[in-house]
Image (cartoon, rainbow, N blue to C red; front, side, top):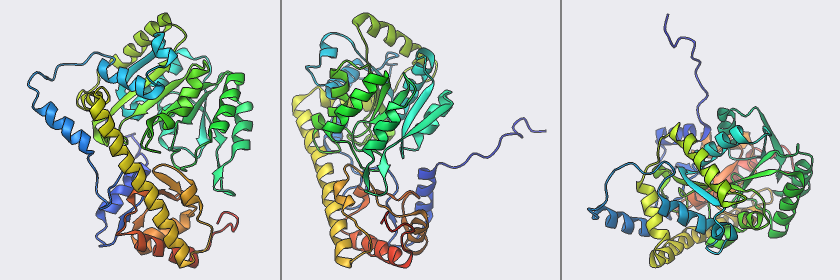
Length: 412
């Protein structure tokens, strides 16, 4: 009898399984709209010029070595990340109440937050948006949370925010519940609250004593403005809420496989910060021991050098601008084809993703008949649209929704 004979086959990860299917497809016009990574105008991965520049300088620095970092990470990296997130004049930073430790990108930051909250937060109920990034469920279940609920977020009727439903669900959440909020560029919908709506969300969180955990994967990358994209987090932190925030530098620095991330927490005093940091270090020590240095060094070098920082902001402007242009291009091509349905939401949504409105049977048709790959929920990576494939994608969508009408005409 095998020692592992009772191990069942796990379900494959949806996104990576989709990528594998795309890679195995030999069709000359295949398109991958599913993967959540930026693509340039040629449809290829883009290494930011400022990152190439810094990597070259680091490679020539003979003073660097491969010794272990401290358990809580490279301090020049985590301190700079805090300033980027909260602003250099943040009261919580000035007063020594802001804590930041290095994590394995955003996923690692969320898992570290989950482990910390499971150990020190009395309430075991977690709320995620409906829909949300699928890994949110997995991370918190794996950490040991069993009561994971959803708050309404996306309206099929308007292809926008179900704000009334969102507020209603948070108002009725058990006091002290943990609520995962997307700092900007909601994944997968591309629908963000306005500043006024964020103010109301913050008020409800404060009234209900909810624990706000922000997932910040796209700062700067969304609008091209790092301050604008951090508005929600700064608003919560500036009003005294005990905010947690998992930061990823995969998208805005293009450091996908370097796993450069930070978990930031706003505590009540410098003494609390010291205690919280000590406990986070214990959790880190018991999982990864200490974090990797290469990606952290790149980000720290850029964020702490004014000239490189300005160059980086130019790079993220390039990415955010191209995504906005591809939104316009796809929308205009669908409009010119007279494609059934209302497609204005492509322009209204923000960030890398758009909830196209395509239904699972239509998505399957796109894959089978047009070799275009996207998630079953209809999420499209807008950066995967290029001037070269926009016609093909638009015609495929047009053919698909003409042949397979939307099941719910309202949703179209």
